[in-house]
Length: 459
Image (tube, rainbow, N blue to C red):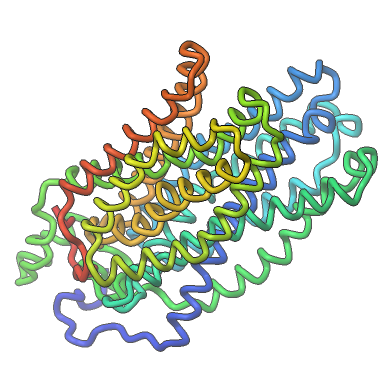
């Protein structure tokens, strides 16, 4: 390898306000696309895919098969986190983010162009699964990459606020997909929806993909990646090359890699577990529980989620700003304690018989225990990890924590509420999830203002 190790360079990488704006827009747009793509697919799987791709089986089996194609995307996400995370740490954030946005956008668009089962038979659902795998493979590193890029671009004093834009992308994408499907369901007949209407949201995503690809193509590399001690000519040095550099005087390189790995990862996993677990209960399980067990019209909890998501456009940047002002740990501890304390009162309000109280309770629960924590997570997890493995560790902690919590939580909640015939297990699980994050935040160091160029983890 040629070039001069960054340990010998004195001038830091500089970025203009325009560069920061482009990076912020890129991070927000990529996350919005990820959540819009997944929400488009999940709604299509629940509403029409059983009739389009699995028409020769019973409606129940067709729905199960359609939802199974939704689930395979989460397996692909984990693979994408490993593959692209390591690539991003080795050759840079920009190149990986360009690839992931192109994979997500292309696969989503092609889903809208798929022939139906009636046209090409069993090849139709097979192609659907393949595209779903490609979509998930790209998405597995998208939010982690956007989080890393924004945190590494942001000025130290505004890092929490700017990094929170990634969290805002989740709201934007989910609301956009839900709005598109709501419009189609209201404007088209069932026959029109099944014959051609379902394709429109997927095909329209092509326009967004083109803009996102253009934006990322013109995005400059993370200044932190360029300043890393172990990066030469845009590629990270291997361990053998670092040892060779250390032998010729580059001792800072080797010193930065002596730390034992693992503690920061498990702390990040705990921070992620609580947020993802609360999300699975509030945004997924509670909607079904309220409709099927409490026999409240399904539009009530879904409307509450929409209101809560809209309020999130205030909550997310506000929490990011507060974290910049007072530090990550005190805000984490406060939010998790408030969420745990509110769990039982929230369920009392939800089950009390008042529609207004139900909506208010869900809006508050969503913003305290899900969106507020997500805002903090976006910056804290990036600050926990050293620059050499930040992308990989962040992607894995997000995906593993998310899969475990969101996959297990609703199933456990459904089982416990069925066995007990009561709502208290839901509140108890919210308390447990929040306490897991509370413990992780207590064990974590204060990361506000940390130098992200450092190669070692914060702990």
